[in-house]
Image 1 (cartoon, one colour):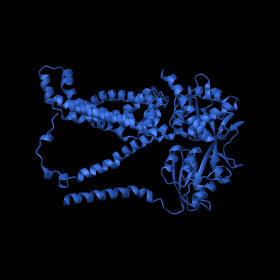
Image 2 (cartoon, one colour):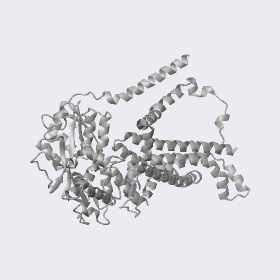
Image 3 (cartoon, chains in turn red, orange):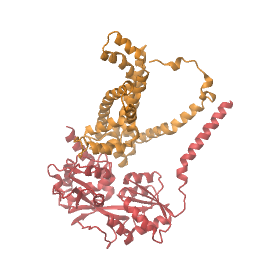
Image 4 (cartoon, helix red, strand yellow):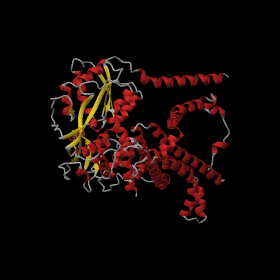
Length: 333
Length: 276
C-alpha cells in the first residue's frame, strides 16, 4: 500500500511539473504595456529592423520593446489564430487578416482607415536573368517555346496566389474573355517545371540557375538585387497591385496602435520605399523608381479575395486545382 | 539469435526499478502519452472531423493518390538501395580495419544531426542546375530519391552494426572449413542472421522516407502529379485551410508506417522461429 501511494504522489508531482513547464510560456505574456509582439510574413523582416529602430527615436516609440516573428503569411496567420500571442500583424494578403477577424482576434473595423488597412503595396513582376537574355517583357512572352517560368505552388504558398491573379487579370486587361484568361493559366503552367513551397524557396530555385523567369513581388526582386543576385526585373504593362495588410489585435497595448500609426507617417513610408515597397501615402519617394504600369488592376477588380479564393483556390473544385491536374496528366503519361 | 537475458537468473535487488514497482512504468507511459499518444489521438480526432465520407473524399482526391504513389515508390527504392549499401557499410565498419575508420563511423550519424532543410539546400547546390560536378537531378524524381537516401542512410547501418558485432565468427569459420566459398558463407550463414536487423532498419527508413519534408521540399520541384510528395501536399492542404483533409492524409501515412512496422515484427518472429 505504501508503495502505491508513493507512486501516485510521484506521478502527480511529475504531472504538475510538466503542466507548470507547459504553461510557463503562456503566462509570461501579461507584461507591461510598452512591449509589442509583432507577427508578420517573411520578407519585411529587414524593413522592420529599420522601422523599429526609427520608431524608437520618436516620442511615441520611446522605450517600446518588440518581439518579432516572421514566416510564411498563411502559417503566421494560422499561428495567431491558434493562440500565438500577437499585438501587431502584417500579412501578404487580406484573407490572412480576415481569418483573425472571423475568430474575433482582430476588430472587424480594422480596415476602416484611409488606406483600407493596406500598409504597403507592391506589384507582381517578372524577375529575369541579368540583361534579360530571353527578351521577356509581356505575359505572352512567358508562353514562348522553351521558356521556363518559376512560381510557387499556389496551394502551399498563399502569397503566390497574387501571381496567379496577376496572370489571369492581365489577360482580361488584354481584352480576353474570362474563359480565355483561364485557358492562359493552363498554358502558363505547362511552362512551370518547379512549383516551390514558398516564395523564398522559389527565389532560391531561380538564383540557383533554374528557369528563365520568376514571378515575384517587385520588392522581392529589389531585395534579391540588393543581396547581390545577378537578376533584373521587368514590370509588365498589365499587372496586379499587391496590397499587404496590417492590423492590431483586440488585446494590443496602446504602443502597438501607435506603431501602426507611425508606419503610415511619411518618414516610415520612406523606409518602406527604400526597402523596395511601394508606399501607400502619396508623395513619398525613396531610392527606387516605382513606375505605375499603364494597366494596373487590383484584386477588387477581379471580384475580391472571397470570390477568388473559392473560384480559383478551392483545393478540389478551384480553377487552379484543375490546372494542376491537367499538367499532371500531360507530364505523367 | 541467442537471448542470454531471458535465461539469466533474476536478481531483483540489482534492478533499481524493482524498488518502486510501477513508478518506472508509470513515468514511461505518462511520458509516452504526452509526447506521442495524445498528438496521435488528436490527429485521428482531426481527421474524422469530416466524417467517414469526408475522410474517403480527402484521400481519394486524384492529387493525393498521385502523391501517395510517388511517396511510396520512392520510399521503396530508397529502402532497397540503403539496405544493400547500409549492410555493406556496416560490414566494412565491423569487419575491416583501415585508417580513419572511427571518422567514417561518426560520419554515418551526420544525416541525423543536420537540419533537413540544410540538407535540401546543400543537395540543390551540389546536384542542381549549377552543379559543380555536372550532375543535375534537381526537380526530378531522382532528386527526391537522392535526398531520401541521404536522410535514411543511418537506419540500416546502425541496426545491422551491433548484430554483426555479436555474430559468432566460429560459424563462418566452420562453414569455410567444410569447404563453403566465401559467397556461400555470406549467403547461408551471415545474411540469414542479419536479415531481421536489415528489415527493421529498412522499415524505419521507409517510415522516415514517407514523412520526410525538409530535405525534399527544395529539391523535388513539387509539381503535383509529377514530383509532389505527400508531406508537401499536406502542407498545401493546410495552407488551403483544409485541416481535416491534411489530417486524413497524414493518417494514411501513419497507417502505412504502422503496417510496415507490424509486418516487420511478424517477419522477425517468423525469422527467429525459423532459426531454432
